[in-house]
Length: 82
Image 1 (cartoon, rainbow, N blue to C red):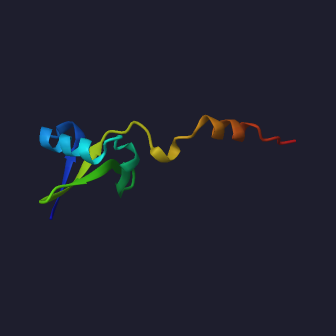
Image 2: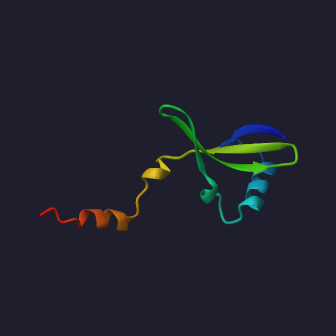
Image 3: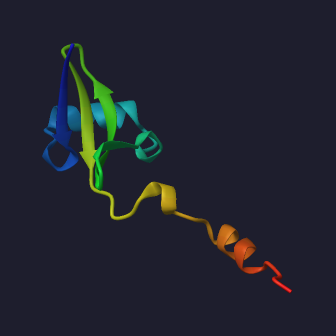
């Protein structure tokens, strides 16, 4: 099996149908961060055909590790320092 990296924006109809079949409820939970080096990374999820294993790159405007719920923010702000 060959490995390929492809941008989500450039998926053809056949691969888009495979994505929809593989992730019927959305692929957000399957997204992983891949680190290339200092300050260089990308986000992707995987799909496979009989011939290829694809990493499908997606654009992310924020780091998933820094995304906090409102509850977490409220809990941290309630700390009494006196």
